Amino acid sequence: MNISMYQASVPVCIRSLKNLVNILEKGATYAETKKIDPHVLVNSRLFPDMYPLSRQVQIASDIAKRGAAQLAGTEAPPFEDNETTLPELIDRVQKTISYLDTFKPEQIDGSEEKTITLQVGQNSLTFQGMPFLLYFVLPNVYFHVTTTYDILRHCGVELGKKDFLGKP
Amino acid sequence: MNISMYQASVPVCIRSLKNLVNILEKGATYAETKKIDPHVLVNSRLFPDMYPLSRQVQIASDIAKRGAAQLAGTEAPPFEDNETTLPELIDRVQKTISYLDTFKPEQIDGSEEKTITLQVGQNSLTFQGMPFLLYFVLPNVYFHVTTTYDILRHCGVELGKKDFLGKP
Image (cartoon, rainbow over all chains, first blue to last red; front, side, top):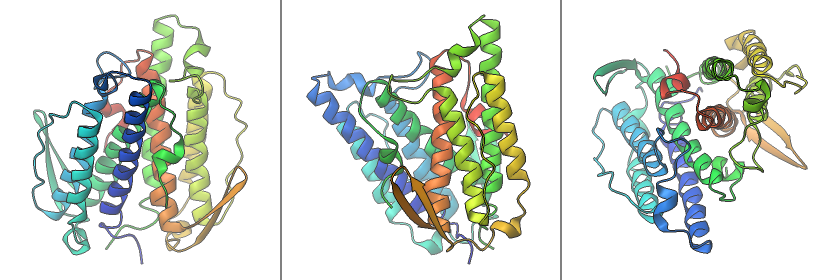
C-alpha cells in the first residue's frame, strides 16, 4: 500500500501545527499567570542573532502552507507577518491549519517526482516532490515548532514532550 | 509510485543523524577554540529540569535505531548511555548510522499496518507502522536533533539552518 504524498504531508503538518497551538496557549496562560508583559515571550530568543519566537512560528506556518501548495501546484495565501502577541500567533497557526484542511488527497498524491523550485534568498533550489517533502518541508516544520517549544521551555513554561507529539 | 516505508524511515533518519554529527563537530571545535572544559557543552541544557545535550543525542539515537528495528521486527543493539564528551557522542551517532545502514528496503517495506507496541515508562502504546513512523519516530528524532542544535546555539556555537537540513 505504501504512504501517499498526501498522507505524509498535509495531516502530518496539521498535527504538528495543532500541537504548536497547544504549546503557544500554554505560553499565553503562563504569561498571564506570572503577569509577564505579553510581548516578552513573543520576542524571546535563544541567542541574540537567532530569530525570536514570533518568527519561528511564522516560518513554521509558511513552510507548511507553501509546502502543501507547491506539491499541489497552487499558490498559498500570503500572511502579513505582523503578529506581536501570542493570541495573534495562535490565530496565524489556526489560519494555516484551516488552509491545509482545504487540500484533497488527489491534489497532492502523485507529486513524488514533480519539479519544485524554491527561491531562497538569492539562490534557487530545485527538488523533486518526494525529497522536497521528506528533506525540506517536514524537517523545517519540526525545526521551527521544536525551537518555539525550546524558547518557551527556556522561559520557564511547563511543557513536556507530549505537548510536542500530541495525541494520536 | 508513492513513498515506501523504507524511503520514509531509514534514509531520512540517516540524513538527520549525519547532520547531527556535523552539528556536534562544530560544537567540539568551538569548545576547543574557546578553551571550554569539554564537559560543559555536553551537560548544557535550556532549563534546569530539561535533559542536557548528552541525553538529547542519546534519545535521538535510540528513537532512530529502535524505530527502524521495530518496523523490521528485530531488536536494536543496546548502547550504554555512558558518553561524557562530544567525541564520544559523535561516535554514538556514527554507530547508530552504521546500524541503520544495515537495513535493506525489503525488511521495512510493507510495515504500514504492522502492530508496534512500545513500553513508555509504565504505559504501553500501540501503533500501526505508518502512524508510528510519521507521528512518533520522525517527530521525535527531529525534536531531539533540533534541541541539540538549540542548546549549542544558545551556548554560542555558530550554526545555521543549513547545518540542520544538510546537503541533498
